[in-house]
Image 1 (tube, chains in turn blue, yellow):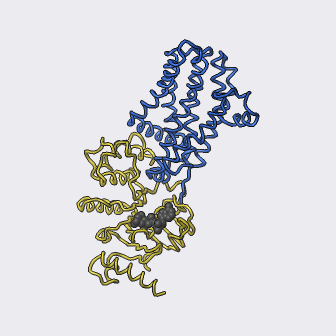
Image 2: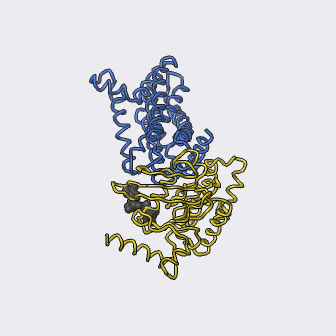
Length: 240
Length: 253
Ligand SMILES: Nc1ncnc2c1ncn2[C@@H]1O[C@H](COP(=O)(O)OP(=O)(O)OP(=O)(O)O)[C@@H](O)[C@H]1O
Ligand SMILES: [Mg+2]
């Protein structure tokens, strides 16, 4: 456990040293939301779609940041070295998840705060929007950790994003309501975590309460656990 | 060979080690003994399997057959990770962190209690002569300085066995001499060191020399015996004589 915290502290120190990435993580989603607010000024579009976007950005941004960060660790030889120290694979994955969850929390607060500022009016409790956004961000981190195991280069790592995130985007109900999709696609959407995140956000936009979204939140939490386990399993102490 | 002194603890005992990498046996049928408390030099041409052997000893090499016992336990046993320090050939430290941030992290991993971390980091910084660079981001250090941070990161835990892959590459003669006197001092304190090197005058500082060629052991000798056996005037020419001799032998077969 101590080594988890030591690792999280080290990753956070690396993040702090990289001001530009922090700025991008915080400012970019706000810019995009600002753009939409401006485009649909005077309509209720932001109220309906704002929460979904607020759930979507953290997932994609954190996925990219984490998969590149862990790939860098593999390539720089530091991962090989860590594997010769008492740090356990679980410490490594949990340390990364913990550090990026910190960044994710700041991101969720800033993005939701900004969206509210530019006129997003969520019918449901805004606190829950933040919680779902935070869970999305953590999920993005954990998926990124697992995906980086499959990538051998930065190019491949970046390609993991369209490979893993885009299919979820297409079927999550943002582009077409899920009940209008062909049955096969509807089923497919059921095995993707983003579907549940979007469902929860839509529900909150309509004015639903915790009781209505707890099922979806539970599924997201399960996916997080699954992604962490996958991240640990794909980490190899011995390599060829 | 007489290196098996009865009663002397072996820090590393290897029997019939073979390693497959990229479909080839890059290490084949190695038998090696490293006595505890000694400084053993690992020499051999580029590609002869030095790094592969070291990776097998620290337990990160896959596709290994044979026995590798380290400090009495099979290589890769979790409890060994506290007792063995490994310095990779390419410096493996976080280039976006400062020297102290790096060393504090590795000290935490090595189990140095938080209260003693500052003092420990201070000690190793002095040992590798990086005083004055503590707050510097590693990316901005010179090549030789970076490799010394990497070495220091293995020293923080004061391990019983140090496996050092070319720790003195790119360092000037003064620094090399200082590091070798540090290695000798560590061995006087009971630590065992396995050090690979290309610099032949360093070989004479070792208690024993292991000479690898094409994944096999060509010689396991003391520096004095190496010179005597080959009749060469210095370690460099003795090394060449042995390598070429073994290559010619193989060609004749
Ligand atoms: N990941 C790998 N996949 C396939 N073959 C490899 C791999 N790494 C090393 N090899 C091969 O294994 C052999 C031994 O490599 P190793 O790195 O152990 O040599 P070395 O003695 O450390 O060389 P150097 O002095 O140049 O560092 C070489 O022929 C190398 O090409
Ligand atoms: Mg090597």
